Image (cartoon, rainbow, N blue to C red; front, side, top):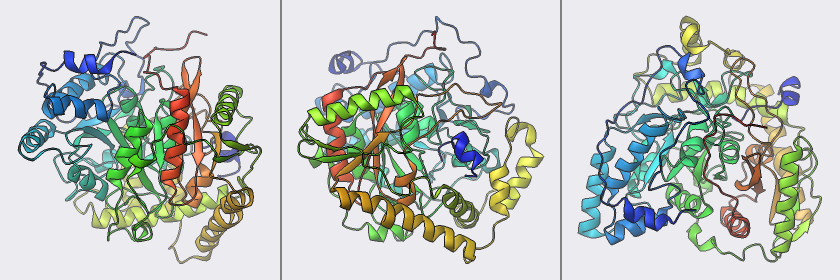
Length: 559
């Protein structure tokens, strides 16, 4: 979950890449792999700028900003191997994630990553590549189960030691595609559903994740570590999860492309849940092309996730939608009411983006406000509280039977016993509210679920899409990243994620520019199962704007 705005809380609610690839082809480094670190005392993890200074130097990296296509070309030509690529990223993680800038974005690296890469190199030599992800290192969020030697903890110390018996469906899909799961990323603990006063990117296991652009700024959440790590080129691409904003907000805050798919396009089985109504996994990448290639690898029906049966046959090879002229003739609506006005900087950059979209041949319908937006926030929270208790308890019983905690009640008790490590700055009021809820048969839950579906879909997005003949709706993804404050929690102003999140419809965020060196994203909201058309629009915008910049690792802003 993204952080909630104060108002909602009150209501309850370029270097030549190919040269670099060639230059590093012969380098083979060996690094220690395994758990990056579990903070026994969380205090050091909560002060990411401690020991940093204005002269913090980030060493040059031969794979900085490298794309899937760059790495495939290097492996095809023999200039690189999957092993050498994996080793380069592992060295990069060691150099800037736990030392140097100290991002704390990677919670654990895969101790088998090098061996897996060697196997994939042998397979490439014998039979050729499986596809575009063959040998490509991918980082995944630490709420996605892997049936290997890594942990799956949602950032919580209560889950340490409870290794998953088998892969989540999305992890299995990555392995089938030939990707190397390089490690797990830090996150807002329990996907930011523990406290209403949390600091995004903090977990008891991983500490406070930093924004790689300005280190005392927040990476947003809850897929904070994936956002920071991929932006800093700690892997080629990454996988996040979203209930409301948790892919698109950290992508926006870290200068990435993030795709929140239609609920049911990507399986949720094996992912530590919040809500079976709204949860989804999705790609986070430095380019639309890489995000599209990763999405194609993730999609697929799964008998363990009933929602994916609705998505059967809805996906297509998204590479076919990567056309530079994709905005020409498209009808793009601008959702102004509620989604503009909280950040002058974000408004200015998105106004420039709208002008660019119009200049690229799109028909801009302005305004195209979303009916009932903001009217179902309290109902959404009610649904999530009910479903979190039910879904988490079910996950623990079926997917983590060897965990030391077996239900939400026991997690609450664990946190109380370990308050010094798990709750040194904020509590667990959301957990307590969820624990107080009854079964999903209760009328209060059913009424809230009905209200969310009706107002977000049939009387919301469906009305504006059909009534205005739109292909997509745009709005600022959020404001510039705020300064991290673990004492007071997030200073969050607003976002455009909720309509797509509650309806289950797809959305994409793309870099829209920078203010004082801080990234801001533009959100495209689409129709259900409309990922392909959205990718076409996002790619055309990216092609026309080229706003992605590598992070700067500044300790703080000098204003």
